[in-house]
Image 1 (spheres, rainbow, N blue to C red):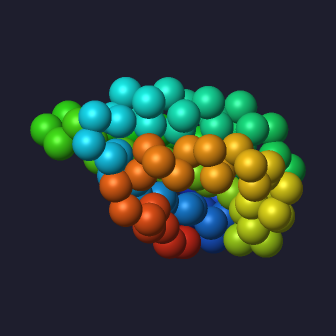
Image 2 (image 1 turned 180 degrees about the vertical axis):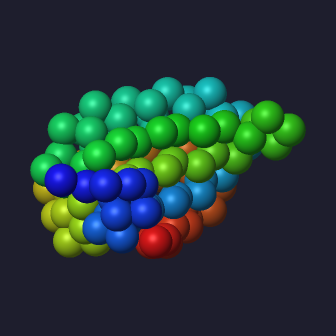
Length: 102
């Protein structure tokens, strides 16, 4: 049994992703990112997923995911339908950026 939050954090990984919407595509990108949440949270090893929108620069988004391990996150990406991601590419002003944090 885990005794405190520090124990939980020592065993998990956080993935933080940054997205910038193409001009005039912020609402569509917001909808797309939110549509991913059920897929992400249903993936094995996912502990949580949250989509955030910058209040001042409303074309900027962050997706924060908590995973049991980096491998779990990478496996979820491998299983994501490539055609769905390809269809969303026009929504991005630039390639998404992301990293693992612990």
